[in-house]
Amino acid sequence: MSSYTPQTDLPLERSRLVGMILGGVSYGVYLLLTVQALIALMQRPRHGQKIANNRRTLICYTLVTFALGTVCFAGNIKYTEMIWIDLRDAPGGPVALIKNVMNYRINFMAICCGYVAEWLMQTLLLYRCFVIWNWARPVMIPMVAIYIGMIGMVLLVQAGNGTVFYNINATLAYLAFEVAHTILYTILVVKRLLSLRGQVRQALGEYDSSTYNKIILMVVESAMAYSLFIIIFIIGFAIHSDSVSTLCFLSIIQVQVSR
Image 1 (cartoon, rainbow, N blue to C red):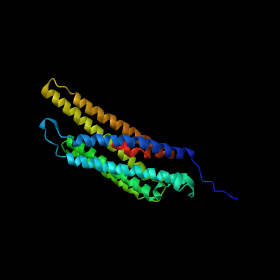
Image 2: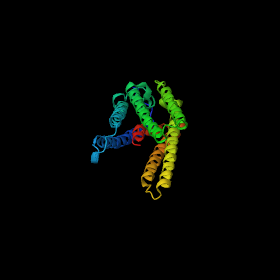
Image 3: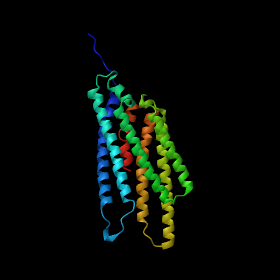
Image 4: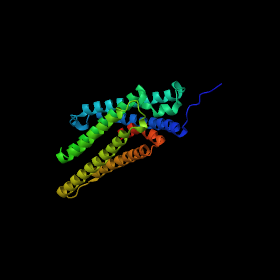
């Protein structure tokens, strides 16, 4: 009597499970940040101050990105359940299901929602940068070019439906565009804030610049954490370490929005 033995890759299977656990933790942080942001946006200004004109836009943005992130996380949870429960006897076993994530609609939908959420978040970064630089064309042109390149790479990744996710070379290019976008954004924003701080000091003499310093520190710290995360993802993808790639991939959306 013959018995079917599925292929095994324990490090890859462990990375999927650990990635989902870490994704759950980061999603919890994301949920907390979303609630805090909505509370802050819905509060009425004190001392009769004027309500910001873009408050409704920011509330809609927060809700839409949270909804997309939730659908992405829920899709990953369902597909993880399918890997070890619903489809555990599928040809190739759990390893084949983890590698062939693009073959299943629910996971494909989760990936699509994740990418759309990232587009929206990068759009907010673009808007911040353009406002700080007063919509200067020398700043807008390279940032928009990188942003368009990111979208193009995502479309190439999604066009790989039915192929092994870890063999899609466009994913490497997309991650490189993300790192370039984050680093360029950080450099431009920090440079502009330092310039403005110097101008204020020159005009007012004795001036407490702690506000500028805190904003600069916040921008640099968030960019460093996210860039380091993406670089690890790129290295894992480039050397075909499926375990590292899986671990990073399952948490990337929540890490992105937590910035």
